[in-house]
Amino acid sequence: MPTAPPSRCSDPACRELATNRGRCDDHQPQPWAGRANKAKRYGISSGRWRTLKARVDRRDNGCCYRCGTEPPDNPDEPGHELDHITPVAEGGAVENLDNLGLICPPCHQAKSKAEAARGNQRRRATRTTPTT
Image 1 (cartoon, rainbow, N blue to C red):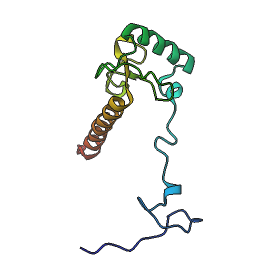
Image 2 (image 1 turned 180 degrees about the vertical axis):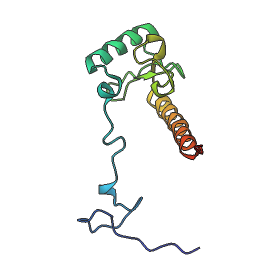
Image 3 (image 1 turned 90 degrees about the horizontal axis):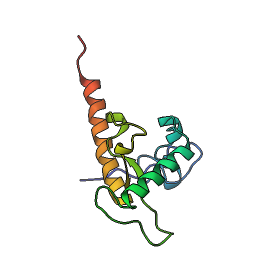
């Protein structure tokens, strides 16, 4: 099957060829750009978030709640992140310690993809539901 010839980047000032979604590598959109940070999304400060993370870290001994891995010994590697076990968008509590856990980066990435897929399904379902 023939393929389309390469096109130029959709940025008006750019003369490079598009590599993905009509844009060159330099003009790819940033993930989560324009989305509020945790303080604005959840209404808690970064200091409060760090305090919650420290409490959960002590409670769980630094282990990932999904796979049980311990935090990395190398300080250059990304450590475990604080995560809502039940997403806030799905009814989870923001600051409840029972809904917070540490999660390693691979598990967090997989969990986030699954949550995004569920969110997209919910959004599509509300968009396609006929109104009477």
